[in-house]
Length: 545
Image (cartoon, rainbow, N blue to C red):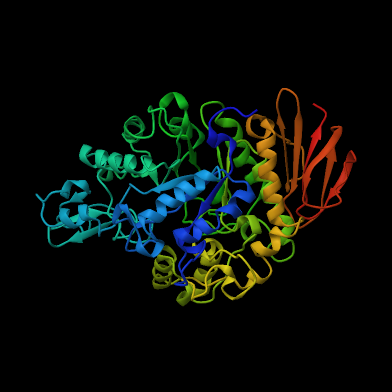
């Protein structure tokens, strides 16, 4: 018997609509395409879909710049398609979690179009405006995540507006109660359509105080979230999931968001593990070597520090991050073994796991050789800014190949045919040539595939409360590259062992092994004592409690 909320017991699946399934041959994924693949997702076993934005948008940032929150972008379909998706998913036991982007809108949203007409125009105070300062080019030194200053001058009103991302993504002024309640009305519009909740884009920025150079975790942030909870998804007998994207979260901050007693969010995405390849104090593009002991330390901290005051989101990949099998694994020599290892390592932890589309078949990064091949605005701006600053173009391309967002956005690899089963037309973004090797059709038919491992892990979570609720304990006395831990409840103890390395490593199994739960090598033995773990070997065994 499972207990708790529905979102604590399921595995979530993120769909990036543009790249998932094209139904009409225009090279762009769409909502009817998603509907056509719901049986596949039901077979995999997931219980919820985090749907990246499908709202009306000029697509400056691939849909994260919204021009109308209550309309669907025509290239994705219609509102009728959206309503059908919610209903068809529900019929299969799958809930749709909408992406909520309310730190900013598109500059083509009617609020901004009206608000930039004059200082006293309706909706002007929906955004963050500042007068020019004599002797300064911009109001202050805040920088955009997408390069350059976070301020753009609008000559019509004679003021600067704030944009923590693209100039086409002006920041909303959450200090204005009218903004907050307009957002809440929009959220209730979607709740009424039967969605399962919201994933909240860069939600920790809405409490910003730009004059004090505060962007993340501003002093009013939690007041706003508690008000949001009370006005929308909380307190109405609704069983909705909310997950906040919080790049700056520590465990203590995460508890503020997700402690049930505070009535804010269900959980947050924290990104400490995804920044372990980044030089301290520098940008994500400034790389340093990966170290497994750092990964063990960070993930174990998050497993234990939240206690009963928070809930973990478990993920390796999303639409902003490189593919795990290419970043921490070995996508050339040990593709299947490392892809399965990272699945086992993550899905056996406490929290709600998220699969990013294609992760379940081991999709990889797609290296490029030229800036002409880049679609993502962040990577294009980074390339131009750094080359202009004197960086070697080849070094910049290398950083983009390692961390660029297009890696995650190449179309879903459904089969080995031209178009990868994604489209009959010209795809909006290049398809990885390795779709001939790694695709859904082949992997679903193979009982030893990466896909089969994901399906098995999802089933294990459904069948074993230990996986959902058990305590976590790291095994400290292991080789640096061996990540091993226990999950324990009142009756049972499971040991998870993963050799995160292309080299063999010694490991001593001191516990009495009683049964093998899952492994990524077909001939894993239960023998105790010292053994040599093979490259990227991972297994789960039940041991005597």
